[in-house]
Length: 532
Image 1 (cartoon, rainbow, N blue to C red):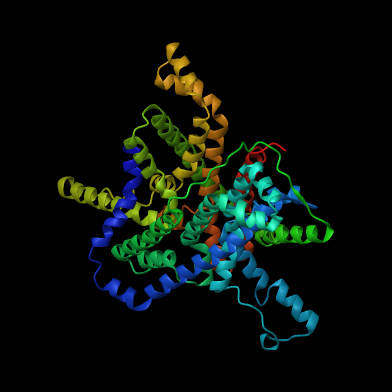
Image 2 (cartoon, rainbow, N blue to C red):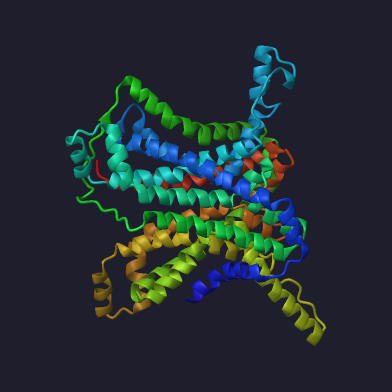
């Protein structure tokens, strides 16, 4: 409960800011930019939601239920875009598609065009470009959960639909898709939450949204109360999204009537249909990972003397320190929470854990605002007390420190670690607890000597997932980081904002390479869901 209260503190402060008087600044926002924030955020959610559903569900069905050339490789290749944050794709494609980029330069040399007046080329720095970038990196959320749902579906159910005369398309539409609906909607919710959390892409493309508005109001205008109220409004968007998804299910329940360990019968596709299926699956992988990764590798190699310098190693060190510290602390806290729930499965304990795990649904910019307000108030109160009592200024002890930044990461990513730890702990039979206790082991020693060794894989997975998420996090880091303590994500954002993409290539490539780690873990886990 103490952990839940601590993690919920930033969220409570953000919600409480609704009743704060922000003066004329809120009227200014209402009259000028608030409409753009709302409309652009809604268009982003609509475009990204539609795109990730189409790509994620179709590719998951093809690689799960169809056999064609390259389907085995595409099963895990389709997860690779998870390794690249959307803002990295935005920087890479902007450089590739710019007027002086390689694509337009090649077109002008081939067709003899001399200026932009001779031809039309789409502007990637737009709302449509931001939607496309987010679709390419977020569709794996839907693909991942939809594929697991298709793998776990009962063979008897699918064979029954075929025996009743359903062709493959009708079996998919009337049987498989409705049964996979909860997983698909869960993946869609995650993708939309990440869409509302995105800062680097929309900021670079000049698309005003809630996240960019919070950043500009806080740092640009210096209005903390108004920034907190924008953050509260963004949280209402998130909560509305969750409520609508859950209420849409009504009283529907989704059950499988047979075991899911039987080999799924796959549709054998001929040469023509197999080629279409392979192209359909390879297209999002190429645009979402292979092409931008190749471009970053090429740019880094050709400019290695500039891209890889002393600053690069310093930034890598900073990122690794933050990621490792957060991963270790998050894993330990998750283990305490999961074990506490195992020992005392009361509604109070479960409610506290759900509160502690709700941070993943909150954008990093909102968490940053919710942390800096109470920390700033504490630092100012302490400094005032010390000056009035001892004539000594303490300055800022917590605001803008590494400790406050790690706390923000914990609020944001604790749910990621807890999910992995909880699933691993639930697989251990309670009989082992009773046996250890009968042999004289206490609660703590049972956890250390019995449970921790058995769930070492889950603990390692939790730590790696948090590690990679911290490496990619931009909004919270941008607001809370200490002065002169930049990370790889911050430096990529700064270089790209200054149009210095050559210097940004090495930090961006490092983030992508680190992001491949959870992709490998997820691929391995999925392949063990069903025996072939």
